[in-house]
Length: 433
Length: 153
Image (cartoon, rainbow over all chains, first blue to last red; front, top):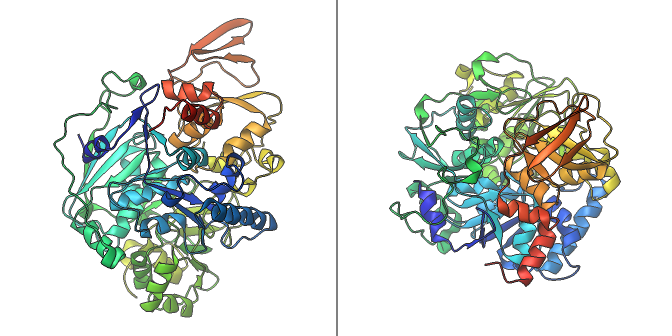
């Protein structure tokens, strides 16, 4: 049993022909490219039946860098306006705007038409990433079919060391479990000693997408409460505690009696406990998030580009960590150094602390809040043979341009030091210079 | 095999020809010709990575008519079913099912001939809901029909 069982059983649902069940989501995230893919199935000009539950973002084509993408964005902006949910234009990466949205709250069912929408699980939302047609179904018909609950308890103890990030925790899980053991699991995360800051909870839930999880939800606690109070100010509304002791509902996705259990291992992982204090900075080597190495094993590798940002690690806390190990720079000679704050709000907050000026004065190129080079969507792509250290969530071949580029996924402290050094640092170098 | 290999993001487009051109475009080997009805046969975790449906559309527009895999990544499986693309899953894989063989695929099994001898491999059962969506031709016709019948919450 996990707290997810309790949350799910509170929600109204109706059966399907099989073990999936229909739920009515509370909040729908539609980034630009995904709404573009839905256009063919949306009657022209008609309001969205569930517009008030939508968040539409222009964040991938932000701003569009080709005529084709400008044409697509124009259609998306017009359709969103006609639909009754005008798009947020170039305000930030969709998942960051999602968690900054007052409607995104603990226990709400949040679905996004982008794979990393599960990041909202960091604040305790039941958050799932889907393709565009699934979210179309929720937009037009108000329903999404969720698969059977397959819970996995992840219990965290201790405190995260200062030079380690939520991304490193994800990489540790990848290292221990490999690419298949978390597939389709609903990961119920309990930070028992409040040792994982909110920025790292978001990074963890974001990166767990790469393991094919159904969702990853951090049980909301006092840390969540304080974060929501800061986000919502006067509009803050507290959340109810989760009750653990609930009778099993009819939603039973566990092994007994489940037709889909064919082939599942009888000792399928049910729980995992990690002491945050034992974590170290880790690196996902090119070109697979699951190819994980300790940082020191690859220290010294010369870099051509570094990038701090993306939905995985573009929050204020990530910029602070990068700034700490960057100091005043300067950027190493010949190195391309890029940074994207994940949203306008993060940009302004970082600016108020002088962080952006520090980076810029040191030679870093600060880009507008958007996906940027991640996913080879926009500027900052890599040539064949180039090596980049960055805070992205996936590093498959071609992820940032040339399939012959090498992408190393690291935490923000590592990127900050790498900006100065022009190479991957050793762990002992992850300090203020 | 991840979505960046199946369909590099630069082939994202609302133009079917552009999308089709990107099918299997991220492989580190020369892209095989997909023309003619094709079944894509893969191992574990097919389609891990991005949720973008342009990947599925590009594969279909290039000639893919079905998928066989040991397992599919969660979002990719849903995207394929939602697009009405038949998916057959088999944890034990597809021994003997080599390139260019002609095969027949139904809900229960895949059948093909090796050196004149017919072989068939039983598929793992799909959830009845996923099967219903496939039978309707995808999620759009399925939901349009279901909503008229009053079957949604």
